[in-house]
Image (cartoon, rainbow, N blue to C red; front, side, top):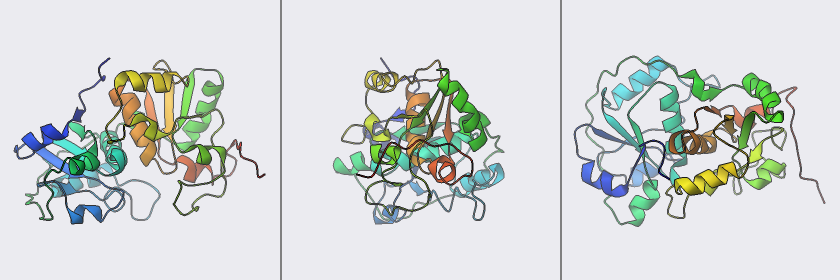
Length: 286
């Protein structure tokens, strides 16, 4: 079984094509300082927090600001955008989802990300790339890719009826309510631990190999269908702040071709703090 869409490129492909005039590399890391220690020659940096998030509201920048951002990065209409980053491309996947939601096309991810590129001993540079600002065309948001809190609440009835699916991609301890963040991170940002009722726990990293690449389509199909997350269902994925769930959204929608997959970007930091939202918690103190 092949992937549903042609949305991945290999490190070999990037090495061969990175200097092509219509290929634009964008590095997106959890560690926003990592780019400055060395990046693929020609790649520009995207800071997921300062570049994509509204400076005051708990929301994203607008479509016009995305247009300006792409222009500042020198991206032109028709350019092939190749995203990559650290930690198996989780923040690169977040950028892929956000740009898709913003109406940007011609997106691919370098399979294996920065991890695989570096492990293969390929060239990294600290030199800043030469960028010629462009005028990127106006964008129209695709709201079918994003879920809001009240939509998730309404979604639960269909989950109970077996028509919808809800995928919690966090760790098992976060899902149970034992912790409220990933291991080795400050346990802060949310008042309640647990998960949204009816969610299936399929941690995002189960979709990747040790080298950071995505597992085969057959392996991914078995992973999700084994938990009842099938392509006939309306699927919503969530995590804590939506970067891990963007990775799972990419797997389900782009690699497996599920027709209706949304990312709940409010995720657990919104749901776990919201008044009146139901939760389930399976962890109990011994």
